[in-house]
Image (tube, rainbow, N blue to C red; front, side, top):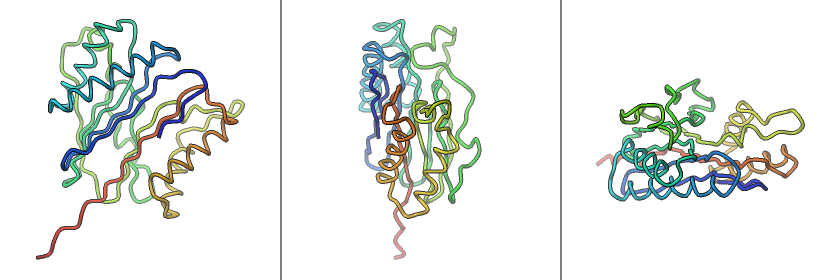
Length: 221
């Protein structure tokens, strides 16, 4: 779910299920102008093209780095790209300067479960003198696990000096899930809570991508 701000932002998300592989990504470009929207559009198009070409995650991000360096050299975007094997629960992800995803298990957030060493945002990789491929991390989910990707516009929504905050964000997801709400309804209610906290006027896009892994039961015979 994406709730746009009144000023043009650069948030986007993408997901696609190909056979048993879920591809998902979230992006947040620098600035609040047309250039930020163009940056996100380039990143999104590169990732989709790489996905269709069956490129792995490092090659996917490299295509974004190269395109931004060529066409929008003054721009960059943070993001997380990931792939989930729907059969095994193996989650692979790469984080490019973005807030770390949250892993929710048994109605609690597993502390730092999906945090990783920092990597430059997309579009800045070469500027840091690095030619190495992007690092990909891997973990195995348990049935019922939820992976929560978000942009900083979610947790930085303010009422006066009071931020919405990461703890309140995670707690809302957990309480709604415990009440039996389905993921789509959880996000709908969460966006309303964020808008209410921000007096119905966001200063930055608020984007949330919630993945819940519920494997199909195996046949007994």
